[in-house]
Image 1 (spheres, rainbow, N blue to C red):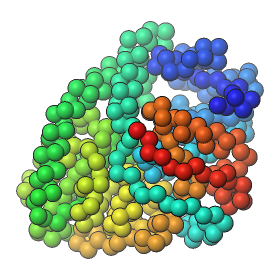
Image 2: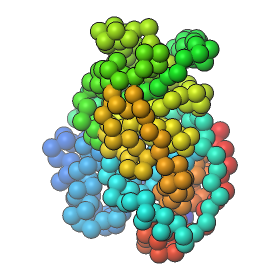
Image 3: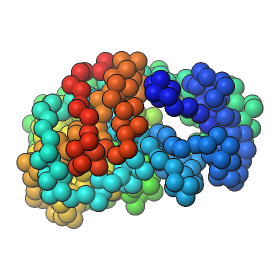
Image 4: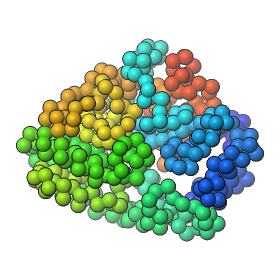
Length: 403
């Protein structure tokens, strides 16, 4: 779509998976050097091809962070994509950075409300599930298969995560094969909670290797977070309340969360009040929860949409004083405070007018929907936030469910 608008586009690839998903071989640049040579090579690419813009999915991986630093030094325009802050039916598009590096981190709700006075948008209901999950898992496995089986010409490639490519591929493959059994386990756990008749608090887990967890929080491992939450629950929650841990939909068991939870719950005397749910839809659990806790999961947006009290431990774009509790975790479980729902609706409205674009990455229908809007946003002089405040933002398309 950018080429149709007159731009020339190049892809820098670091492994066989990158090459496999870029069909134009004449505009593919294979980087086969060591990580220590990457920034110098990137600078050479910028100079050689007269690059004006840098486009990335996420901005915290080491190769991305170095490219961003070099691009800023050279005055390039930086476009960053991410999963939607209001997923599943939206994608995040921002300039210069996302999540903890987003411009949203420095914006107050008051400023957003002032800007919103310049535009109108009917707010759709919050979706209850992630529409492209099966596509996401399938293409993750396929990508790692390419890297595992055909990466001989990229001898210096090193993944940005702790596991090697073979281990990553095995985890994706195991995840695909275990989906029917995991579904049964999830239904059993959800049934116990639904018909248990007890009040409960919900803990929204993330992937330990996720960049938001690693880069934008003070936790190094997921068990560290689990320990803080269970200790706070044991000290502060009423004795008849329960604690439900919901795993991320893409959790692949590289960390044995159930074992860690059993150990911590027994250690703090709450083993009979702690539950674990393996992925699945969030809405059914949120509908009856008293409150929610997370590091900085985007699922926190669904918590706030329902007006539930929320405690976060990391940097999140929605971590505003109007929405998120500042109480210590034990006090939060003892007396959770509800967010300012009117202010959150204005915040959500602001996101839908700016950085949230209807569509998705992993299905053809989602990509088609995304391309109808986002390329014009990339070519615009103003970033999404300035475009709204200056009155230059294009009208937004109506949301359609992406399947």
